[in-house]
Image (cartoon, rainbow, N blue to C red; front, side, top):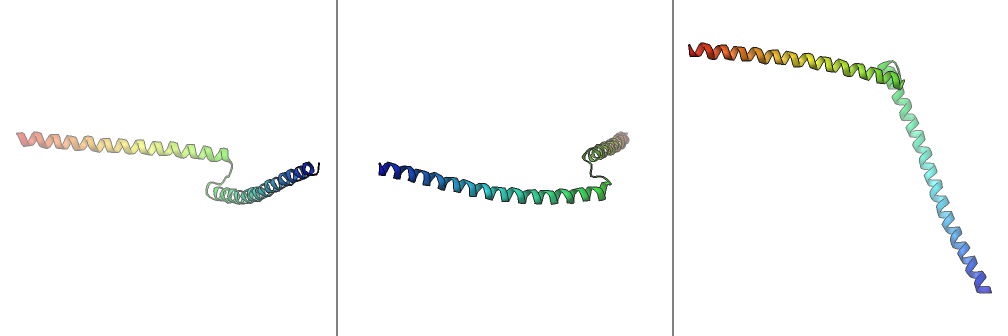
Amino acid sequence: MISNGGNRDAALEQELQGLRRQYEALRDRKVRVEQDIVNLTAQLDELKARAEAEYKTSDPEELRKLLEEKRQENERVVAEYRQHINELQQGLQAVEQAFRNNGNS
């Protein structure tokens, strides 16, 4: 009987040690998560302030609209540049063709 009670006590002690380790791990994890929240909140506040300073808003929807406007503007500028390059290439080809035609005459 005594050895059975001793085994039960040992098993309980072992389980208790395991639970203590789990508690310590969870407590450490909680501290890390709380610190992450503090750090991420500070980063978010900094980014909001930068957005307000640079774009006059920190509203995500407004920023999406501004981004889309900038993308459309970039697409327009690239299209104009592409057209300019094409015109230069065509002009150069015309000059080269005229030079070849004059050279053969």
